[in-house]
Structure formats: C-alpha cells, structure tokens
Image 1: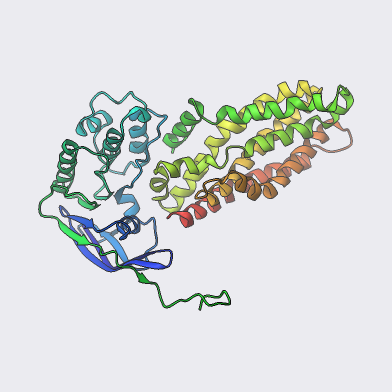
Image 2: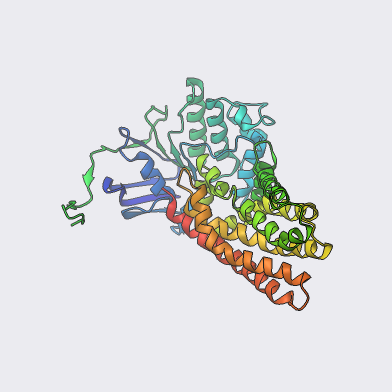
Length: 220
Length: 220
C-alpha cells in the first residue's frame, strides 16, 4: 500500500493556498499536516479525498502490486463535522455507515465493539444528539473502525476531545498503522504519535496569476 | 442502498421529521378552498381535481430543499459524494425515492379525504389518486436536481421551488388533464396518462444523473 502525491496545488477562490506538495507514504506510515488557520490544511485533505479538484498535480493510492486503487473506495474521510444524524441512535448511525461504506472483503469491528473501542460502552441506544460534543467526536471516530479502509484522512480529529481521549485517539491511529494502514491528519495538537512525517503549510498566499480588476469591470 | 432508504425514512418519520409537514400543508390548502369558494357543489366538483393537483404540487415542493442540505450540514454528504458515478447516481435515486415515500405517498393517500371536501365523484377521486401516484414521484426526482443545485445556499427553499416549477408544469398539465378526462366523456383518459407516465420515467432517469453532477460540482 502506497499513497503518493506529486506537485499538488490547491486553491480557494482566486488565491493558491499551497503548491508543489509532494509526499510518498508506505503502509504503516502517517503524515501530520500542520500550519496556521487558513493555511489550506482542510483544502489539502479534501483534495486528497477527491472532494475538491486539485489545481495541479495528482494523488494516487497504489496497492502492493502497484495497481492504482480508487481513493474514494479506500479512504475514510473525517471532516470537521461528524456525519451522524442527531435524530438517530448511535447504533443506527454506525450501522448505516457500516452498510453504506461496506467493502467487498467485509470485515471491520461490529458496532458494539467499535463503541467500546472509543470508550463509550453503553451509549448505543441513545440518540446521537444526546451526546456531548466530545462524545460525538469519539462516535465519529468509531465510524472509521466499523469498515476497514486503508487510508484515513482526518481533519482536526481531536477537536473537542479531552486529554484522555487524545491518547485513545493516538492508540486508534497506532492500531491502524500497525495493520498496514496509512493516516494523514491535519491538526494543531501534537498527536502523541512517534515516527510520523510532518508537512508544514506556510499559509503564505500567492495570487493565482497577475489578474487585476480593471476600471471597466473586466478581469485582465 | 437499502440502508440509506431505511435511514432517510427513519429520519423523516421521527420527531422533527418532514413527513407530516407536506401532508398537513396539502390538507390546509385544499380544506380552505370550499370556504373561500362558497357552497357551490357543482363548481367545487368541477375544479376539485385541479385544486387537489395544485395542492399536491405545492406540498411536494415544500421541504425539497432539505433533501441534501441536511446531509451537508452534518457532513454526511461528503461521504455520499465520495463514490463513483454509478454509486452517487444510485444514492440520489434512493434519496429521492425515500423523499417520495415520506412526503409524496401520504399525499396520494390523503387525496380521497380531500376529494370528499371538494364534492368529487368516486371516479374523479380515483383518477386523481392514480395520476398523483404517477406524478408525485416525478416531482421528487426532478426536485432532486434543484435541491442539489441549491445545496450550498443557506436559504435555498425558494430557489429550489423557482428552479423546479417550470419543469413541474408539464406534470401538472398532464396530471390534471388525465384526471378530467376520466370524468368528462368524450376525452380519452389514456393518452395524457401515458404522457404523464413517460415524464415520470424520464425524470426518474435524468433527475438522479443531473443531481449527481450538480453535487459533484458543488462540493467545496
């Protein structure tokens, strides 16, 4: 398993947030993306997940034989929002994603085991909206465990988590890496992971080109 | 995909769900007509099918904007968009189907009750039910396109209705003319009904495709 990015650049509106990003990760390796607010961490992760088109460059996921795998089928994306319905019970939410994101090989923890793994035993029957912000985030992390996908793309995964949960999260990522997975996380906080590559986005914005707004209302 | 259908139906029918909203609006619109028009039974039975159809059309448009917006707000939409074209198109189809089951089907079932209020004959009521059964799914399927285009707009409801209304007019025309043809003698029932069915099938195909394209383009 390999994740390779070559000369990726991405933009928001008309400013280039990052350019020339390249990395190669093998199974069991992690990449931590750091940088100030607005540096393009989330944009980079969305580009990697295929949710945004890169301005240039490409990102590809290769299996052990070197064949290219579709990223959308082999990546878990955890964004700022938890992708859970407040009205539905925790078990229903996780059950839905387990079925919806099921892979051909099957596998993954069952729902109770995933809830146990994030340390929230006994909340399966509660509506998701009843949980606190930190508990909701932990259930969102449990979604990554119910279906096995080799690449984890995590955007601020530890937002709203307390210190004990930070460690729990680091354990989950370690377990994922030990199983040959790859993790790419954007975060401000130290994740407590050893041996990870880090990528610093400077946040220095470059204008896309020398477009200027002329007086007659035309971009030239 | 069955999991998605079950989830959307569960959300629509739980507290705060949109399932009852449409049918209550339908009841309100049609129930005030006899009071506004006055107790002219002949007039009521003559305009009955048209009023029922207009009420059902407006009730179907209500709440369409939430079709994808709710998923966008909690982050689920990212995971739904992270699929190949076929998967995304099927997802939109299933979501539209769930929307119809939750909001369109109750309108069909409420039609006989409102037919009584409008002094409609049994034949006319039956014809309206049959045409609504074919016509309301078409509104849900084409409505998905408007919902996808307006997904990123905070107050997209009005926008969706305006986008969809021109496309829904043919459904209204052929639905009402088939309903009238069933009770006025020389007019044939089948030609307008067949055209209505054709529109429904056509929209069931292009609705999900166009909607999937719009969701792809809108992800940010």
